[in-house]
Amino acid sequence: MIQHIKTPAIIKAAGNKEKKIEEFFGRVNSDTSEVSIARMTSPEGWVEPGQCPEFNEYTLVLKGTLKVTSGDMEYLVAAGEAILTGKGEWVQYSSPFAGGAEYVAICLPAFAPDLVKRDE
Image (tube, rainbow, N blue to C red; front, side):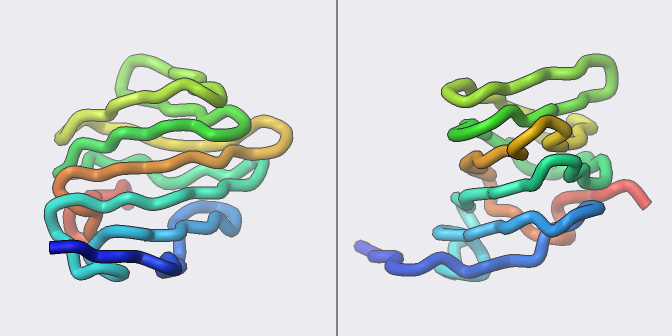
C-alpha cells in the first residue's frame, strides 16, 4: 500500500495556550492505528496536562527547546535532540523558553484521546 499525504489534519491540542498539531499519519488524517506522525508547534509558555499514555512516544525537536518532565526527572530537549517516553510512564510536555518549540512526535500505537490518560 502507498499513501501520499499532501496536507496534514490540524488537531486541537490540550494545554494552557494554543499549540498547533499537524497530523500527517494517524487515526484522523490517514485512518492509521499503528502509528501517528505529527509536527507540533508550541508557543513560549505552553504546558499540557500530565499524562500516562498507552503508547510509546518518540520526539525529535526541530527548533527551540522542549521540556519533558517525568515522575522523577526533567529533560531539556534542544533542537537536533530526541527523547523517547515509554508506554505507561507519567510525562508532561512544555515549551517554557523564548520562541517555544517545533518538534515531530511519533506515537506507537497511534495517538488516541482514550489512550493518552491525561491528568484531571
